[in-house]
Image 1 (cartoon, one colour):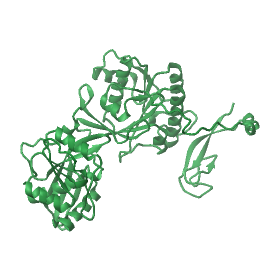
Image 2 (spheres, rainbow, N blue to C red):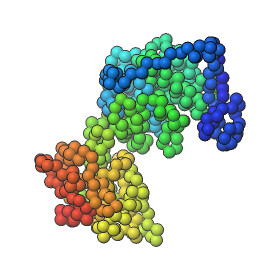
Image 3 (tube, rainbow, N blue to C red):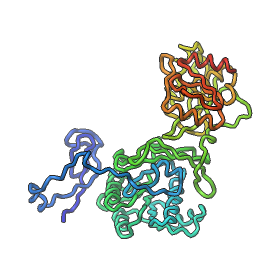
Image 4 (cartoon, one colour):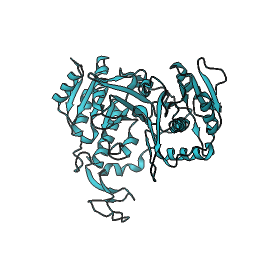
Length: 455
């Protein structure tokens, strides 16, 4: 039987070395050799290699395409980001800051799946079985029959998966798992890559749905090699401030559903609970309209959300500050230049602070118009009309560009009681929406004139 051996591969040129060196002997790059496993070629395999038959090739038209069966986890918000539920043989990677609720949510999901009749396994590498049991009691999961394995050696985990054949298995976390075939420490690039690759192959061959918990870096990205995200079928990120009770789970990659979907949860004494009306989180409760506040209808995946954009414009010094929370700071500087050039409103000597309420991060350009109107409102000290919303992308020429799926945004706003909307002309509906007065604009200066007439 062929025996695996350890080699070191250069990440720049792909060259190999039998031992670690500070400098690659092939391309001369420094600190690029990483540990990997090379399988020794079998003499029998080499002998009959020329006799191997090619695999059968089929056209796309001849392949029968069937929808993947999904099993709901019992948590509607988690099912939303997963694309409807877990998939047999699927591999899910979920990352987030320490203490944000990854293990809590997965333990709740496993308990719901177990109570629905599925065999489940929770592999913990960071806690003991007693600690997991104590957490389950705090969450109110009394009498839970979820199986727990406290193990970090990959070969033992794979043997347990083969012997028990659970429907769903959670590995908490992939950075703690190590393989005996490698000499590097758990959490290293080589260990994370090899262990994830073996677990992915085990999921595909056995049909077990494996959920990997991943650590994140200081910047919030998943720690370890980038190839880890390419291996798996679904990548989820936990977002939110640990000091807040609300959490967002965002799908960054999903082979079985839409990307950029979000699930909204509230942290309670009994664990994470789904939020049925997430727009209420991102709207401040003002008894009367206040200057510098404008409500935006944004899209998160397939879900329209109403988010309050707050702006504060104050007299600054010789070097005025530009600060945004939840929005792109560079785009804020661009919008201020457009506001000055095309609407004649200057903020060059003012500090400008912009915030998206609730800790949500907005990346779509449809927030431009709301940001500009909030800044104008704060600068003049005059609030926008009650029940006012706005959305639309603003170009450098001062034009207001349409936002995707504008009809759904307007219907969501009308459903929540908003009565006045300023939107791009291309998003104006052909049929009126009951209870909602819509002002369609083509340029920034038109939008500001409309707001002045409504004040």
